[in-house]
Length: 389
Image 1: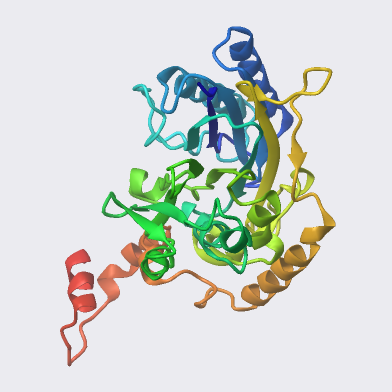
Image 2 (image 1 turned 135 degrees about the vertical axis):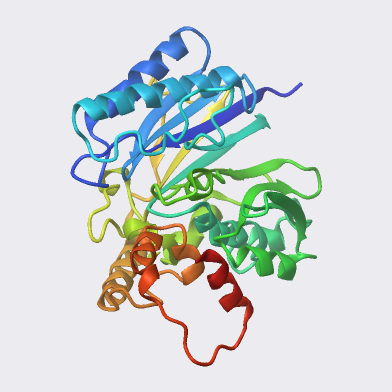
């Protein structure tokens, strides 16, 4: 029987240096200390601690299965300790993603983002972890479509017999809390119709259609829907498998050769270009951005991250590569153009998305100064506005 291994990536904004910028070393050390101790005790088999912008990221490989309470408790207690240290250091946004205080066995729905998959190890199992900052889970919709459904991106969909059967996409409606599974290529148009609205419909899982092999998992946490108000952007994570009857590593990375637009950026209220960067450049600066994404490549071997002769996990910083210089340049050119728009759409998000930012506080301040016009045409939008007054 093939080795079963679980890859868990759990992230949290526990506090940042100099605004919503980066995770300082004291917090990273807490993550490393906690996970090293858990590895010594045998709860996890291997780990890697890093950051994407101002989010502390915990990569854990273990054999406890998905949604394991001990794994989630480990992450929760790590984030709590890091947030407490951040508070003592007066770091900005200390514990921002910790929306609930009592752990009840699963970290989902408590603020931190989670992407997990349990796999049966293949002869060789390359994986990629993506972690983004200053954006929402729907930011992965476009690359997931390109990787697993678009033959102009993934040549294997055309020339590899193991891929020509296509993939199944689980799409979550984060507003109605419902999900649907769509099969590509047969239901490609229906898939695009949904995930082209990334603020509501999010790709949560992808499976190879012919045998249901899990191929990708993405976090779907929407902080504003948990808190009922804007408390920071969701900053999603994703795990993708590659090679051996799945898209090749190069096909997984190809969508990021160009920048594309995502929701988030400054105060979670703007459209911005997603910039692929290496870990050394994973710091959000200009207008709290641009939104950034890192990609780490590694191998799973016998239930753990393949390590070097000194026992250190072998991790490849995939976007630390001149191949993505064009995307970075595009991102800055687009960012500069959008900032010339100031607070006018389309640089700023539309009205529906802005309801979950700090804009409602401005409207509350002005509500008594609005007057009815002489002629009113009753529309669904007007009825909604009246109901909110």
